[in-house]
Image (cartoon, rainbow, N blue to C red; front, top):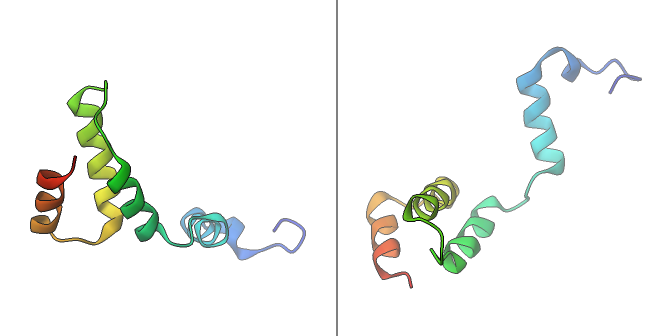
Length: 75
């Protein structure tokens, strides 16, 4: 980018978007769904479990009812 004087170097938000497109997860939704199905509280506090659930929920594009149902029926 420096060698080509890319315009990305002049706008941090555009740079981040391009970086995410290039190096990010190519299927965030499916990755989040997979992680949700394997998410368990285990020995962690419920706050840690809930925080991870909310973080993954942002990427699955399910409505509130679907998320509640999933949480209620998950093991």
